Length: 174
Length: 290
Image (cartoon, rainbow over all chains, first blue to last red; front, side):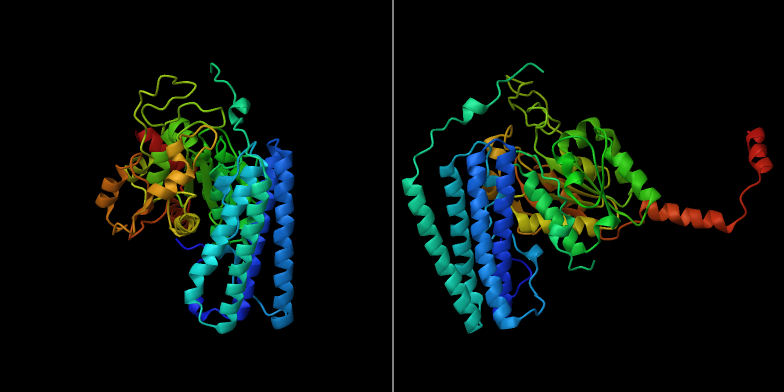
C-alpha cells in the first residue's frame, strides 16, 4: 500500500520531486489544521493550540520548498496532483482523540515523522535522477532531525494519567 | 473545472463535528479525492443522505446536498436523479439508516437500477444516539440497550445488495486510503446502482477489533486472493465472510451493465413524444370496456 499513487519514481524529475515535497507538506499542514479544529470543537484547547503550531511549522517547510521550486522552475505547471498523496507526513485521522493530552499529541506527530522517513527511504532506491535523489535524501534526513526534536520534547513531557473514563458518559436507559 | 480540480474544491467551509478519530473523516477525504479524479464540478453533483453521523456528509461538500429524513435517502435520491439525470447523485449514510429504517428501500433502488452511488459507513452501532445496537451489530455486542450482549444476528449488507442484484458491490476501509479512494471512484464511474460498504469505525462506541488499527492488521484485498469481480457466485461466497473477515475491493462488477432506469425513462419519454398522445375519449373508453 503506497501512500503516493500515479507517480513513476523512476522518471521523477527534480521539478516533480519538489512539487511532490510541497504537496506532502501541504497535506500535513491541512491535517494539523483539521486536528486543531477537531480538538477545539471537542473541548481540548491545549492540544488544539499544539496542532495549530504544528500546522504553522509545516506551512513554513512548504513555503521554503515553494521558494526553491520557484527559483529553479518558475511557474511551470506541476505534474503532481494533491489527490495522489495519502498521509505521507500527515498524521492519520484515526490518531486524534477527544481529550488527548500533549504527550499523545507528540506521539502522533512522531508517528507522522517516522512515516515520512519511511516513505522517502523506500522511494529512494526507485528514484533515478541524481538531483531528485539528492532532494529525497535531504528530506529523509530532515525527518530524522524532526524525530529527534519530537523525542526530546517527549522526554520532557510528563506521562499523562489515563483519565479518559472520567469524561465518559454513564450508560443511561434509552 | 477540468479533471485537474483539486480535492479542496469539494470541501465546504463547514467544519465536521464528528469525534476526533472517527472513520468518517477518512471517508470524506477519500470522497474529495475521488471527485477530483472524476473531475465533475460541484454544481453537477448532489449528495443525498438520511440521518446519522455519516449523513452529515452533504454539508461538508460544496456540491448540492440534501440531509433528508431517517432512512429515506434512497427514495429521495432516485427522485433527484430522475428529475435531473445530468446530476451525479451520491447517497451517503450509516448502517442503521440504510439497513434498518431504510432497509425496505434498498432492494427497490437496486432492482430499478437508478444510476446512483450508495456509500454506507458501516460502524455496527448507532453512534449519534450514544451507542445502541444497529442492524449490523455483531451477536454478543454489549451496548446501553443490550447490557448482557446482543442476541440478534446482524444483517449482512454485502449479501443483501448482491442478492438484490446490484451491479457493483465493493467494500473499503479508511485504513487503506488509496484503496478506498479508488473504490469510490470506480463505484461512481459504474453506469448503474453501485454500492460501497465502508467499514468506518466509531471511535467512541465501537469495539477495539473494529478500529482502524485492527483493520490494518486484518484486512485482505480481494485482488490479492485472485478474486474475479465478474464472478457473481464467487462474490456471494466471499460476502458470507462479512463480520469475520475484512475483505476489501470489488466483490462484483457486472461486466455487461444493463440500461439504467433513468436511461429507460428517457427512452420511454422519447417514444411517447413521437406519437400523438391518446385522446381523452380513448382513455375513457378504455375504462368503460373493463
